[in-house]
Image (tube, rainbow, N blue to C red; front, top):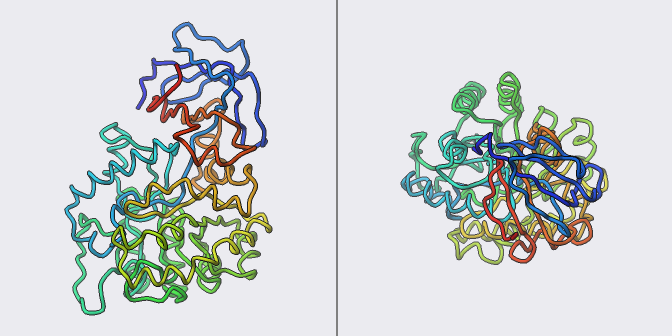
Length: 413
């Protein structure tokens, strides 16, 4: 956390305002500690601030990725459960640092990270973005969070094992599992509502959990003023979740028109994760993805853009997500270029700033450059509103990253 006595004053900035969809020229932004305290013109002054002149460059909010797994340091998620948690944490530190270097100052981990990892980042023991975590995802037996092969019976239930899911069957077990994640500090609950690519024994198009089980998880989350996010591919799985009160849907590649109205009626969010499928198809096996899972990638690979187009045309709130595993975390910014086949730059920028902030219930704190927001800022050379590729090439265009009021990288003299 930045020292509250340390001040930084950005001068001559072209501030990118995602809400207004424009650049606001000749702005000054004053940061004290981890907070933006004033945004204005040349009249913004401070005797004690370090002054950084960003003339000719764009100052914008730090990026937000709403679907990450920072502990997924291999694509072989079944073997991950048997690794040393200390080893996984060490490798997760490198994943987190990479995300920050790419301009992501807040990420939502939707299975794997816990209160200890989040505290390590908050307290500066690990370099990385603000970590909004949900603990372990909830899965039924044989569901997307059950990593056992068909020939294995025993499931290790030790919470310290670095598996990404916990198995629960029946309403009472779902309630208990949700309450355990909430007790440990989870900021949302993740439900596996359908089959998935990485799980060994289910079909991608299956539906998972009974309606009563889904409602039980939603009730427990809402009782704690949290929400449920759901992994789902088909409209059958998506619609069951939305009808039961699930607030955001992850992936959704195989959805049809029947889901679009429900998203709007329920004020729910959609989080496509297109980057992961192209990465898994091309390089998944090189990073540990088992062959049986690699084959399932092609069940959803080509459908993702169609689902994005459906949601975009209907003005469903779409947040930025990537869902990358192992060495494929470095593809985190390819989501920008993939989505540009359907969306304009402003829409994609909003998905990684203002819409993401709404999903996280952190409006006014992240995803914006305004007084009272966290000092999570990027300085880029070029205008992302005109060329989204600027955000996909940090080595060429990213000049400064500030996270929680601390400059973590800068090439500005």
